[in-house]
Image 1 (tube, rainbow, N blue to C red):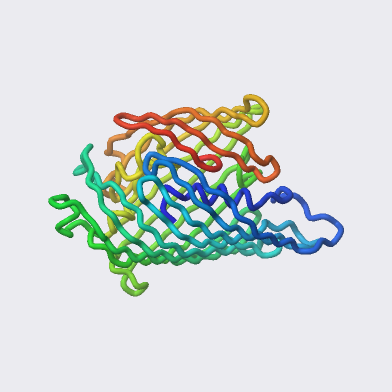
Image 2: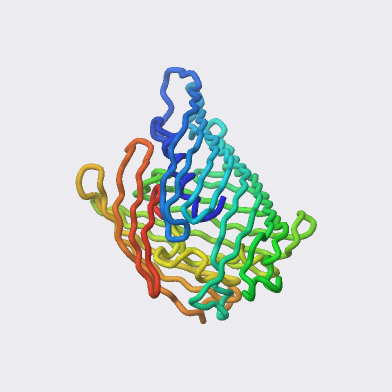
Length: 363
């Protein structure tokens, strides 16, 4: 699923999990499995998409019995369209076995998503050119719990892109930029996850760490060959009713990477205020923080800020230009038990800024 629409999935998944808190102990009496299917309207906005709207059909399965607590499994079909003539059809599944011993995911999507290309790294400019890819994606993965809060796993992702339009005389038109003529991108990823958060959504305490190493190559069905390292660390602390949240993330590649898959800054989750494709290169690093405080009733206030940089490679991140962005927003609580909330943020950055309407916290 494309990055700009990823928050929609979270909104639907949260709405689907309007069941008892996910970490609550199982009841003593045996319960029958619960299965539900229902439609959910989709509405959101980002600077990259403008207004987005559509519909989703959600299937939720909560295990019965008196065994260990288990998170609900979901299946999600989405049909989304934006005012910038972007569209997407997608199916995602997210499953848990009894006691959360195994977690498995999968998805397939088809999308036409016109984007903006500013260039890569030091060659990037303030002006951009429009390009239009049509992409079919498939992904599957599984993680096994090996300790309290600890998981290890692997996943495979395949994306086939057909470039249907580039600007005449632009940098992408000659086909010299990696991925500018489309092609197949296939990666195999191994990952380790440690998660001590008190809740999956609206976290108040604990931490989260994910480290992943991926590889793409012809043996996997890819037209591109590269390696990828991703580290995502988050921490949450409560001071009374106020939550202090922080995140540090590094995403680095090495090899021939299609330009749409390069590490990047910006978007609705990392360095809000910059549009998502504004800065991309072989590696990126970012640090951001939020202060989340309740206001009254279902409303909360969030103040956020961050800094990030891009560079050709992991080893040169320290010499890059660090860019700053920040802003404020409201959180509208829709379901306390499930942690369902709507995020409305306005962020500013040098030469940029915009309104974001999405689901859940940015991290």
